[in-house]
Length: 518
Image (tube, rainbow, N blue to C red):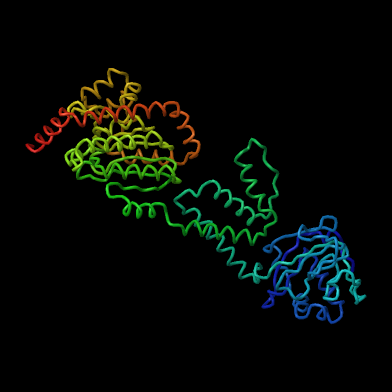
């Protein structure tokens, strides 16, 4: 019986039979299998001399139930499979020989021949392309279209029950993906999309979107890049990728444990693409010690390099920050106050430089009163949200000191010289609403809903494109960066002089005496 070209060009399926799956593979085309069985029946010993036990299995097995679930492949004589090569000279490796003279390397593990549609079933005598077939009857089994498959047995699902398990795992992986709390990033999401489409529909079969359709083009590229990857392999790759995402330790758990070991005065947590740096000395109203200065610089360095989109500063307890811990000035080392003032000025300049140079959006969540340097630094933040009970004070003149944190340059720019002088020189305490009116605070929230409203907004910010936010900040801040460093140096130089003055030391002593009387 002649086999029509239309019949042989239909989609092919691969399966393995029984316990001999490691040694057997075959092609199956719609409505073709009865003809294959009939051809086998016409061969001597029903094909068993050629294929051994595989011949019996091929003859008796019904592939009808596998047609929808097995991976599809097809090829024609004019367009042979890409895995079939035409060498310039006979190869020394074991190969299949067909009438179109294409060669398909036989991988390790397949000692027996594999059925070829479009050529005679080949036995070992035909592995040498220079030798003609020794069994003339094989020429009667001559088909016109070359379609060849040779897959490692370990990549084949051998039974329908295994296929069912794989499909169940695939469905489970889809549900697990929905439970992920962290965004895995665009690259991973595109990979997941491509694998899902390949596992569900096979190779990419839709037109390429236009160049301006960026999103759909990226998705199309992810799918199309998988080429002829089988549905089974795509399904397994999808399952493995989702499993690796689910099994990864959450950023919250990771950074929380790191926070305990690295920081004693801070709590640093990364979650939902947000790195939160919390001043954590609530019993001291989050007053900044020398240790805290160093830990904040370390936390900023790490936040600037991690995968988070934005970085948030806030305080633990009722206070945002009460400014410098004045005990820093009372613990004079044996080297003398000159050395202490020099070291403090160097540290402060370095500290403020970390805020000037920070590459990502920096947001202050002012949860209570703010004093001193915690106020002056706000000019270097990109957004400042405050609870309605927050207050803002810079008591530099009371302590015979001078402004820092680039406030001598930024505050007049933000609110004008007159209003800036009222705060920096004359110690005016601002309410949250007043600070907002002067441009120092972005927005004020009711204290009862402050945390809920602010963090909901921050999570939405963190979903924005990371690089776009960083580049935009650099564009906005870049023109002033050099100027800010100059201002920072000048402020620290003046502060060093103030710290060494008798006026400053007397003011600090008076502060502690008044405090002891309370």
